[in-house]
Image (cartoon, rainbow, N blue to C red; front, side, top):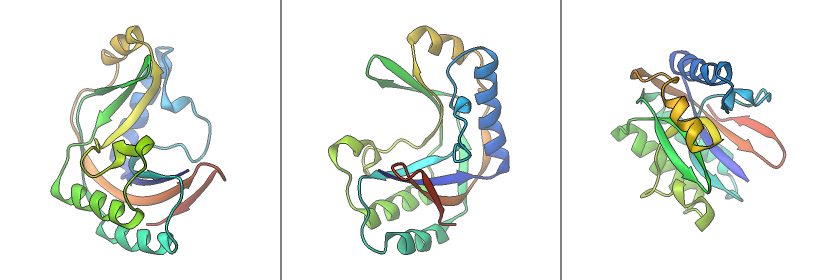
Length: 170
């Protein structure tokens, strides 16, 4: 599985990491608990099982559209089976929408299991925690930051989940 991810500037990165730490301090699930060096705040633009030939070169070229505005809203909750995902929504801009569309055009439409990355179904966000119960979500909403964070998406990377390899694209 491959994920194409856009990375935030230092301001947005620090704000998300602060939310991760507040969740840890409250003994709640947090994306900050993942010990890998590759774990960092990001916006997933596309997820695919396979990539077209020359995808890395073409994706790097698409990364030339960066930086784009990145404004985080308060919080959003996604259902994930019996549990929930807590995230900070990224307010959509024309530039971000174009970047996403360009990436999807390069890698092709998603299979059904990654349909949430399709052009008409994508909700840009930065994950704060996964696998939360409803009770944990309620507690977490009172803990994470609610103020708008202004910054930019400045980087682009490819995450190969099978090989556990990050390829910087920009």
